[in-house]
Image (cartoon, rainbow, N blue to C red; front, side, top):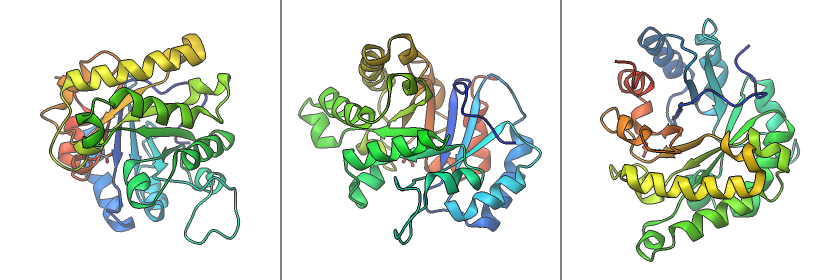
Length: 260
Ligand code: PGA
């Protein structure tokens, strides 16, 4: 059985968001190539977010590797109903997902997801034993006008709206500055540390010690060449990787970071 949502995942958490790439055949090929390049280890968590249609093929290709975790890129907040094109949390869980991205900036900016929708999705994930990876981040304009902390705290507060005190420890956050996603522009390790510190502070205010166990991932043009510096920052507990997760060699290099 791939995974459990009961205890926080070992850190660092290295997550690959394939976005709308890799159908079932390509997912299978990727996982065959990737597995010998990344051996099982208990000092980190590796999670793949394939397109939902490729999840069964990906799980099957990784059947011998219960250490590898899988999730979906989005869920609807309702369990089922007349919502053409959507998938519910329980059906994602039934298909083998243990995680779901929630509020990725592409969902927010291209598909109109609001803070309120993100909150409902996070609550639905928790209700169905999926770990929500809640994505937050400012646009370039917001950064230039000095509003990074204000924006990410607003997004965090909204996402926590329907999350109980006890459930905070079951969350994962991903700080992904919008201007760094898919652009080749990476936040400096210091930018990441500052934003993660802001988020950690609010998690602690909200949930005390439980706020410390929430992994906070950085995302935005993470590559084999910059991952070590990013992960060295305090409160940078992992990375959410888009483009560089599509190639098994580069994603294995990222997943193996720090292992010499
Ligand atoms: P990128 O994407 O690594 O291609 O910048 C990150 C993400 O969108 O999660």
